[in-house]
Length: 327
Image (cartoon, rainbow, N blue to C red; front, side, top):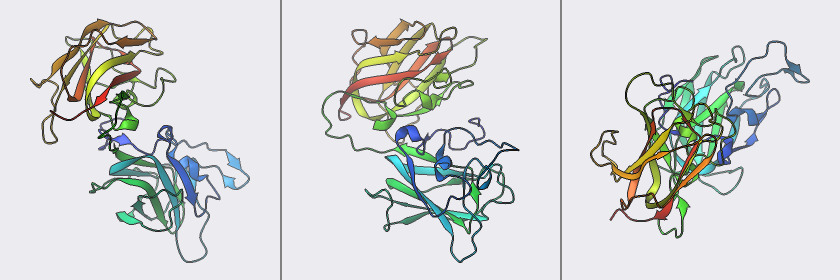
């Protein structure tokens, strides 16, 4: 799905398994396994595929309910987060989708919480074979979600858009300030034709060229860029730029600027607040690049803007430093 089709593209997908998110319970998943609900791959339909339970469907699907009640599925987030929106995706479910759904949330240590649930999304009408993007207005941090379907049926995917929220105040030592697991988030970029900006700060090295940020070939003047918010204000002491798997399409050079922004500030790519952290530096294909002595002192920062020249693909960006205050 392109960013133009997704109204929540600026937010992180909290349901992704590489963050540690798991489906821990379902009242019934007779026709299609509950784990498929959060699979990263887009759902598919295979016309002639059947298994011992009937037609194989790429999602979570319960059997036809013959008693009162409804089915539900519990998702335990790998990292605590604030939810900004959902996509309840019923693609390829036509005569077997649930007519309605709602979502509850809670904060708990158990895999399958029994109480403490709060309604996050009221009962909502669904259509078959469709995306359902719904907003959430809550600043609370959650660890679990419960998708309720009325009364039964199948959902291909549940996408959970939001931001990781960890209290890093008081953390000592060097950490990756922009890592997704520490609350870092890509918030804007010039282009992501081939690969999402949200791949830049996920755990581990890229598994292939598609698991990074890659722009289209630039045919005019200028260069591409991406802006990322740190998980907490900090002082960057070491930078890693990884071009893993990018060989004929890595950027020739990279530079990084940093700035301090407050919550209500307009974080624009042309803001006069940006200060040079890493001057323009050469890159090579398919390797990790570490920069330390080259970094210029800019003090505590909340955001960085990585510029690549002129275009191309970056697998990962790491910003190692110490958590600090804004002063």
